[in-house]
Length: 173
Image 1 (tube, rainbow, N blue to C red):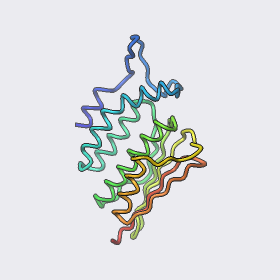
Image 2: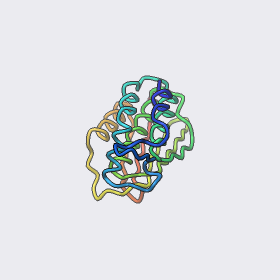
Image 3: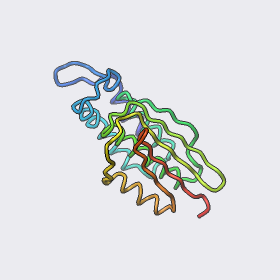
Image 4: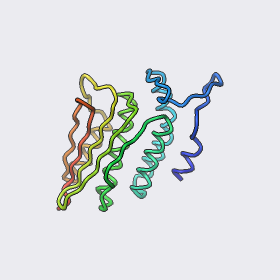
């Protein structure tokens, strides 16, 4: 289902004036370009949110594919934890962090690092977007924090030097 949704959106986007563009790749990070990007991503992200219980690996590939369509590049190290609950939480954090990075920071590159010890799984998501003067935590970050508390995890938001979200989940509940 995700692959079909993404396939329908691949390639340059045809604008109302008939011109074609691939966003962000041409360097346009204006508010107007970001709003167009978010409009394009909106339906894909809605699909992803409605399928949060699907396979986390599939969801992660769909998220990366959706953002790559508008010129965002990903560098992912590590792999999702075997624990489905923790993997699902990490995917939700990656989705929300990616959305915020493009919407608020006009990010063009997102780095994701996942690692695990016998007692803890760790996720770090950072981006090359504009660093905000202040972080205002709206529904997205609040939702990530709520879910982190439910798992006994910690979630840290670090606005500089690169905007970064860190999640640490204990594996010994």
